[in-house]
Length: 397
Image 1 (cartoon, rainbow, N blue to C red):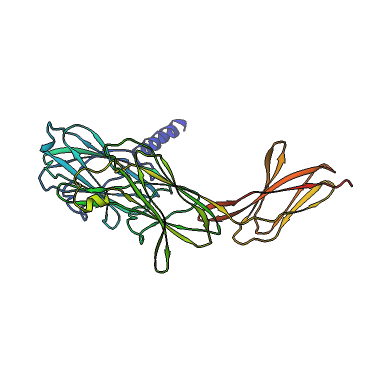
Image 2 (cartoon, rainbow, N blue to C red):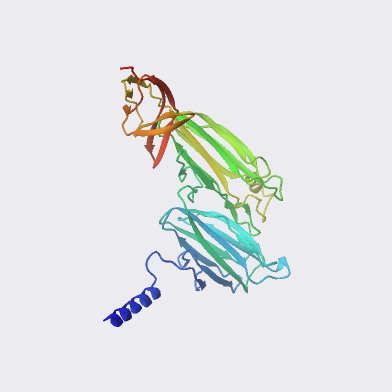
């Protein structure tokens, strides 16, 4: 009987190793499948896999598509497999597109050296398709091979492409850091343009104080004018009123404060980020080579402090102190702490808009210091107000 059981177990184990169970994706290297010359025929690449491709003709368009099952970012590396001794022989143009086939990124790769080019990441929303085109031009790169490597990074707080207009702006939830990138800011040799812009919509969950910073990693680029144009505005009397607009250079300080002020509940702010090169591009002065910020990540860092501030009253007994405060609007509850030596220690949480909390087991005729702050749960986020400190003394009898 033991031999039969062992035999059956070996069959089960062998079968489980041969089958790819759902959620157990293994990285693989695949070959491009023709014809993939249009959006409709785009070849699906499972994220995490590598694809070997080749542009056999001057007008061989290779389309690929990706889908993410979660929010996050799609990472793509393009590798020139067959380097050529002269740049004049050929260049690939690589385009990235959003779910509606709108252009969100673009770059070019020379045939000179065998190098890996990191494309601007795609901020992906769960369930959406995103597309990539490899085109052998300008100065055709036909008859050469390339390799595409993909991966996926899970996360809620990346920009969601395509967010190129106010109408498609992604919601920016306060108290989180969002990472974005400009996917294109130039014209190629065939006058194909790519002007990626990133729009964000900020809506206050309650009355409070908002701080917004634009951050980036300071670098010395090839071009002094490389940088971002960052604007913050609000709708006003049928138009827009600018609150802040600045040029942020790649080689300048990496933390720039855009806003620090109060917002009422439901108030709206709009934030946009674009390349400093746009003015040069539209005049036709600059073409072919993108600026240094292409694909360079930036961070929009935000803080939000609830205006709600409880007026805490105390009631003492011999061995207990009760803290109370009237009901506040836009409040989910309160956190209560007590000073223990030089530091405060958390006592508990009240999950109501009205505060009532009793600390028992105290010594009689002794002073105690407490602090209380309100919190609000909204947008899967917990927002906090400032601390309110009170002191009370237990009774003698």
